[in-house]
Length: 367
Image: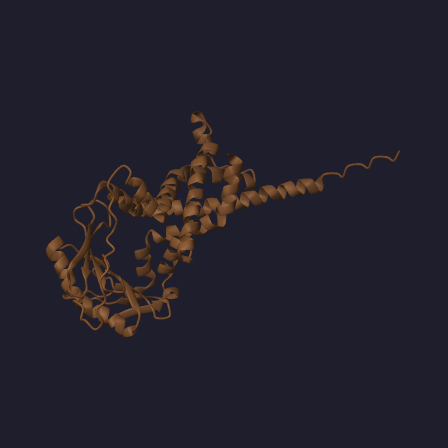
């Protein structure tokens, strides 16, 4: 088991280091974005500019682009962030002041470290292939996090000794004992992160497995027939309709699908305890008709289980304390991966030195 743990860890060490660092940086992504992009913090006023006017400003700046979503800040002084794809396929993010209707920050993916880091963590910037690799990493991490404590276990009476870090007997023993103690302490968080990450990568398969024991519904994927030249209902009317029918809770997102012919209005859900749970109402943008809905807190148990994966994975379920715990888990993963590589290098280097220092066998005398 120790050899399996070692070789799986070595095979995935670099990838797991990337996952650990990127995951830790994303736990407080919104707060970090506000710190490194001061333009995202705006001065609130009495009234807001209509959402459709914000959308028009973005489309005027990027003619011919495809807007995928608009994200509305939970802070009153936060800009609205539009995510779009330019005609040449470049990902673009545009932030708009919701009180003045002016663009306050605009740039491609390279200008937004938080979004770039998210795509690294989610798919290694490699699309579906990258997502599969991340899923395989997750399975490897799950194995390491389950086997590591078994290999480490010193016995009930020696747990304190098993968690002791020896600092006065050389670097090798110091890092070895730190690796073991750190891995034992972080194991529970890493198991949770690995399990939820794997299940999110293969979410359709997880839904299918759950359907064996409990009802599970899929998110709507409505299609609308194209009507070239036809006017679309202003977004503000769709938001007002959603609030009239589903409750006047804060607007969190608008997502566009089917080449912009469908708009999904995301309102904060007040009927669930899940952090970031949303009431998602899908509208035909030509006539404003409701073409589907997906309301957190009013879904079958199996569906709610699937939706809880992201909340558990990000640590949002318990507020700041659990977010800090998940961030510490990500940093520990990076540290464990790096220290594991160093321990392997140190071990193999000592072995080579011993072989080199061994005396050559004496030649047998000729008969």
